[in-house]
Length: 269
Image (cartoon, rainbow, N blue to C red; front, side):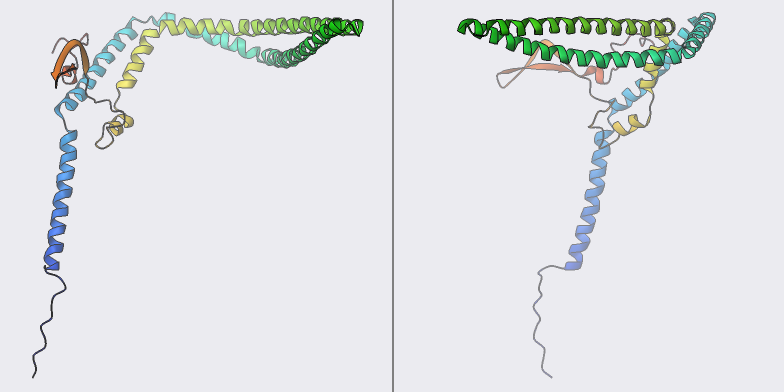
């Protein structure tokens, strides 16, 4: 029985072993990449800044409680009652205010139309003055040209008077509307002034709360956008580092870890 010819392989390596090698190396590469990302992310200074954020929020909350205790409840109650009274008064005048606002809107349209009309008359007057100058030089139709100038000047002056009267009426309506709203605005300003310190502290606490945006912006692979946990560096003027015969500003990054170094109220434990 004849021996079959030797079949030459189409590859000079074991295909199965190669696939296993690629699979194992890919898994190792994935593990190393994930480890590298988290090792780069989990810096000690980030934990320090996150902890200080909690301490700062607790300190602000204590200050807020102190300010709330300082606030006289009787004064707040009196202002709230006065505010409600002024709001009710304003509500009762809503129909009159709406009518005044409608009249003011109509006058505003008339002001716009009269202003455009006066501008058009002014352009015609300028043209008539030019034609009068030409007529005087040519000594022809002088009286007719002068009559056109006088007529257009009288019309322009009359339109300016009407425009001024409309603007004055609009200003009076604005003053009336402002007067109707001024009482409630004054009470709101007094209330805001009374609660200004509390409002400022409440805003600081809201900014220090760890909400969804905090975790998203400081998460791995997304902390390049605009993170709250970041390297805090300061350029120190007058101190340089010579690199290849070039003076480069020296940078201080101490506050990245020593977050409370320049913050008042954090000098204790």
